[in-house]
Length: 371
Image (tube, rainbow, N blue to C red; front, side):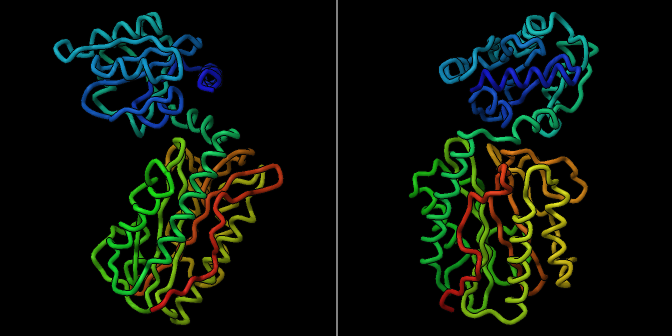
């Protein structure tokens, strides 16, 4: 699989007219080589030449054995020791991979590459030109094959099993952190390898903050409670949000919930091959705007999902790239009213030949728990 990914990557690099790529120890490196590294202060880089030859891995010597044992792709290794520093290893890698300073720009990861790595590259290859390689890399990762989709479907199944168990344990008087701990425990109990991200439990007025940090606020009767969580499985992530009520909510809260539910349905219905993120966002957003709450829908309708919880493509106004079969992303409209609370309903989607399929199927009607 990884060799096929390298072949597709080098073909894309050649088509873009680049000399190669430089990858940080982050998601793209994991996608290409199967390796996961802590992004520390020791220089770690993979250079991918455009000619399709084996990537050159500049690696701290203490990580070499682990990399050789676990890499899913043949590579040329250039280890360096703390006493020597990475300079000579990097110069040798540039020489082996590119025959000296690359004849053309190399793509780098604008959101991952640090000044430390950039300056080291510039020293090893004087006159080096760099461009943002993120769109090229994203275009390869957006479309998931059958094995990737199967892993995402299992991650979705796991988080839904956990979410059901969590909701059955929720009670008035529990704090947001209490519920958060239950979410973590129940996700791990399903056999997941971890959580996709730090889960969010936002209750009452706190639910008006889309990215709330969990607190010791107790759940209270009448609260809307946003539960946002995900499970990791096979290197892939799920990401689901449901909003529940602790006792019967007021009429305004129920009205908001129904609008978000309708927006979620409209967004999912808009998914089809060739549709764009702009169109999907418009389908969901128009429901909320027409319902009078447009200013309270303060984020994009969705984001790409896979080996990262946030990747491309975005379901957002202005994204006119057609969605290909196999593209995976979230649909998560929300309404957030300061001082009152908020609602978000999020599902994980894949584009199919027939339209859109949701990996997540957890019930979307409002769940009213004992208040």
